[in-house]
Image 1 (tube, one colour):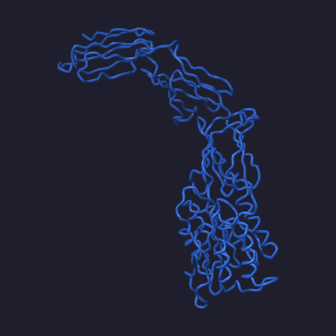
Image 2 (cartoon, helix red, strand yellow):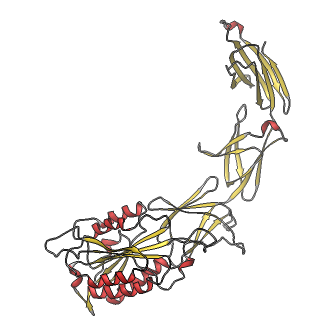
Image 3 (cartoon, helix red, strand yellow):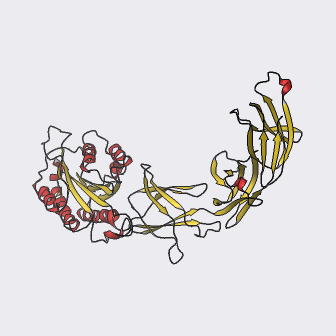
Length: 457
């Protein structure tokens, strides 16, 4: 079997996975590891020659192309070549040529000197390949397995591949079967390509290279309520749907033609995309077609919610409101009065963090419309006491008292409270009087924008 990372045919690689130099982050380095099958079965006859010779010849041609590419690094791991079979040695694998600059000649030379001998510990070779990739903050690690057989050492290549992907060590591997179709055994390892006959093998290598390195673009259409892509200027987070790791963040943009901007992203991953609207919208398992322009439609119709008081007031400049979707206890946002925010269209319930709290239900947000919610300007109640004590403020409503505020027991003889207009009652007893009989209560009215003095003595 052969486990390989395949490189690039003549491509415009500098335009692939990020902005041009000087316009944004540096382009990632694509690291391609060839893990070449040196097992005994590679001596088998295969059409024009034995398998090992055909594999060497085809890979060498690919190496000649890869060696001329920028932002590409290569390495070679071989398995099944150090110990003769029998006996079966299930740890027979070695990194023959590590990653490094201008090493294609070394890899080609080592390929020529390999003599097939042993068994095929594919899972173990995959597991060991994790340490072949030195730490790198801006690299794409790709594995291509080229095999003329299946696992022979009771390992589980599928499990190993999934662990490597979930840990973010490699992207989804490529698998090419030589001389026979092994798709059922390897489709869980990575993207499988059939190379049952010699011409198919050569073609499969080229397809793999194209998918791994050809430019792939995407366009996210943020659709309004009419199905038109007019929504924009929203952050979009792309997650690897296999590992759950964050791969990209893009602020959605319209280009100079008024169309959603083109994104250049890695086609070897499937993505879960979160559009950070209020509330967020999520689409899962987005698969890209490599080398093509992919359009991803997401419905995010939005309208605006404006919160304000009846007129400007210094008293309420920091007043906030909890916004919840109708029927859900989850807090979507805490919005300040005086500000306007965009929300996904629908019906919302508001809880104004005033004293007392104000609940406003069934607020409708519609496409391209600003819904304005206005509350009365609060007033100020100045509570004056001659001593420390216990008690609080209550709202008089429908013949009942609703709690609003407890007095602070910190020695303050005066407390200033911002209250919504209404009728209130203050209830107070001195800390130094030990009979309930000495409880004081006083009703008072708070008016918008006015100050009311309440003397509790």
